[in-house]
Image 1 (cartoon, rainbow, N blue to C red):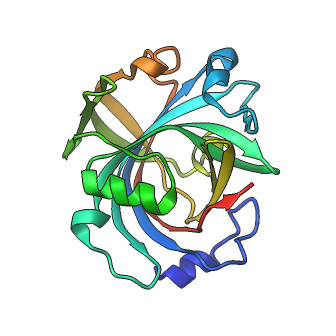
Image 2 (image 1 turned 180 degrees about the vertical axis):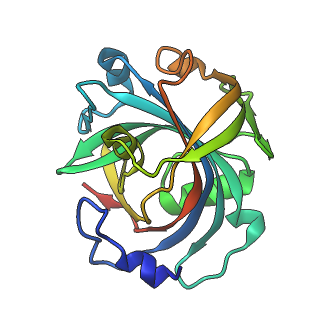
Length: 238
C-alpha cells in the first residue's frame, strides 16, 4: 500500500490528520505488546502533572512494547539500513491532553547506539542504548547502567478479527506526549489500524528496578502484530 493510501485511510482515527506535512517515515514491525493494569498511586510519580492519566474501567495501564524499527527516514530521503533499522523497547502509559488520548514513555531503548543518538537528536525523545538480540521468537535486551533486562520467548497465535474495546484502547493511539525539562511536547502519528494476534508466552523475564511496582508477574493482557507503516509529524510545544 502506498504512503498516500495510508494517509487517505482515516476512518479509524479519533481525530483528523494534522494539516502540516508529515516529517518522518517508520515501520514498526513484529511488535510484542505486554500490558499490566497498575495502581494509580504507584503510577502518579512517573507522569508529568500537566498530563492526565488515562483510565480503562477506572484503572491505569502500563505497557512494554518490543518491536523492530525499520525503514526509518526523513520525508524525501532514502533509508540507510545501518541506522534506519534497529530493535526498540519502550515502556509506556496512557494519558490524555487537549482531548487527545495518547501515550507517554516511561522508558525508550534502542538496540543500535548511533540510531539512538540520531533519533534522540532529531525527535527529542529520550532514547538510550541497550544491547538487544532478536532471533526467531526470542527477544532479549540488557542495560548495565540501569540493571534493566528483558527476555522473552513466545509463539504467535490467531488473528483477532473481532477486537474488544480494551484491545483498541491499548493499541490505537495517535499521539505521543513527552516532557523535556519544563516543556511538554506533542507528537502526532498516523498508521493503519494495528492487525493484532494472540500471543503465547513460553518464557518471560522483565526486570526494570525503577518500575518494579508496575511491571510484575504475568502481564494482564498481551498482543502481537506483524506491524504498521507510520508517518510522524514534528513535535509541537503544548
